[in-house]
Length: 436
Ligand SMILES: [Ca+2]
Ligand SMILES: [Ca+2]
Image 1 (cartoon, rainbow, N blue to C red):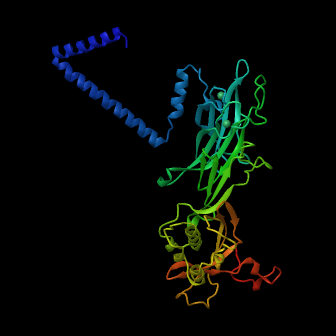
Image 2 (image 1 turned 90 degrees about the horizontal axis):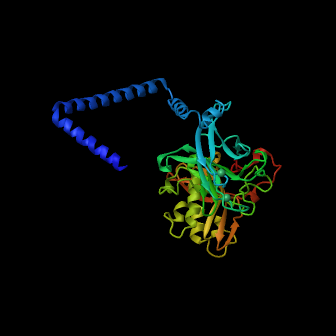
Image 3 (image 1 turned 90 degrees about the vertical axis):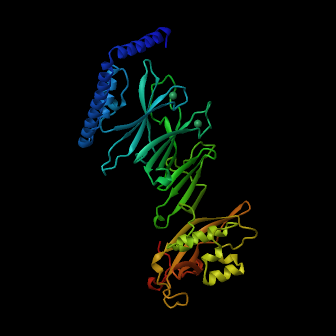
């Protein structure tokens, strides 16, 4: 503030004080005016809010329109630019191609015939032409027509460095859905990673064929997706198939550094093979694992406990019958650790399934409890001894039984090698045959 301004402010303050001193009545009048104005504004705000709430009127387009008119239509308005059926939801203004100039990243929703309103995206750049062309480059996921079904979130990470003269950050477009508070309020169920790839010379007219922003990773998982900026791995949780037992398949994808992509070398529309896939507890092993009503959950708990130095629940607590006898004997081969010499450092369950319809497996066995019930749980696993990982000779099939209301691993079911040869009549097929 200039010296003149300060002086004017000081004089105004002195003037106000003198007026109030000379005419004491003025103070009350001014006070009443202020209070009256406040009540009027409050009333107006209340009425407007009520009208908006009752009629469902969205004031934002009007406010935007007003703002554009105020500037004398000198600004680009993406809301007007895009056709009405593309409802613009978000506009970001960031440098997406590393040229030091910002682009507009516009996300919009559109309606599908089945009633869903997914998101799509487009980047508007103006780095070509004289005068410049405002050109749309599409953000197009492979084999899918949308980026998200609920909310989009844009992030930037320098995922790929190969072939870049100077570092350019890649675009990470997350599709998020609402989740429970303990999951942070939202979980990302979609992640599409786009990389800027120059597709024409600077002096050429802009084009988007081949795509200027190419997909180098497209992930979807109903249990959440996480990107690790250090390792550049993407971890995808899928709960489909394990919903009842709160288990999930955790799949980890690694970047192919040489090719600068997560996609398959054979088919760029498909993800490459994951570096790891395993069945895990979606929310960690519960403390009351022995009380679980789900036999497959118990089996996972047993194998996880086996691999731990100080497991919260002793492995023998999961067992009964023959399995307990073999465990006490130290017969690890019985549990699928056939040729292992040395200490098992980690166990990774790669597949887990159960056959709930074989509960009446053998009604003649009644020594285990009043109402014995049996379920077959089948799994494949890998074990890590030192630096080597080997697969168990699987599948390993367990008969899990109910003892005093708790599931216990009882004994091995015949392995597939002992299954009857194909071609036998169906009615003689054993009851424990898997039906998954
Ligand atoms: Ca730029
Ligand atoms: Ca990069």
